[in-house]
Image (tube, rainbow, N blue to C red; front, side, top):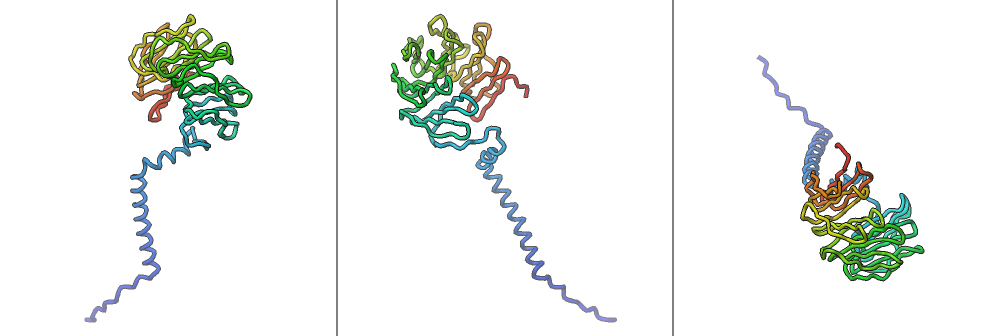
Length: 286
């Protein structure tokens, strides 16, 4: 019987060994990258989402906090903020504008491309006219948080400790407030009708005076927007209020978040924004 002869196994070529090694390393690298991506997801996801957001970030000439923005048109706008920061948008980019104050600016409103107002800490009031911002006399040293103009000759500002100022006759005058609590937002329907909201209060301007209106909830309200003299909305600390039929009533809040601002396009279309990226759309069924 012939003896079986064992033959040595064919030796693997060096190139094939290197290929197998590289394949194993690539597979291991994929696993490592997948684990790293999962662990760091909270860090890079906001950056990635910026590419897909309908609100992409625009280059800013400042790193200081900005508190308010007002647009005259799609190509003309202003923003104000910390340490007297004033930015101007001229249609292509935001640029730093000369500011006559170092106080924090909390609210800005523009009547036209050539006329506007800004208010802030320590009673600061700025007027934009003649192509520049300038400080005007203020009857208060309290922080002013919101300003709203009815026209170039008639406007209101509100702030800490119930501060209410009225712009009339070419100057700002202090007006008696019915309550001493902070007022955070003011809006005017007309020269004879307006609303202000704040810490545990709703004020109504009618008949030439500001009066307290009964609120359905005891909470801080940050923003108010009126569609007309008979319909409007207010939002605050987990609350949405509606004004209709001559009274304010509470409306269900689907978010339970702190709601910071409300803006109405019409009686059937509006938006609310708040903490933690909350966005609510009134009139939407989705």
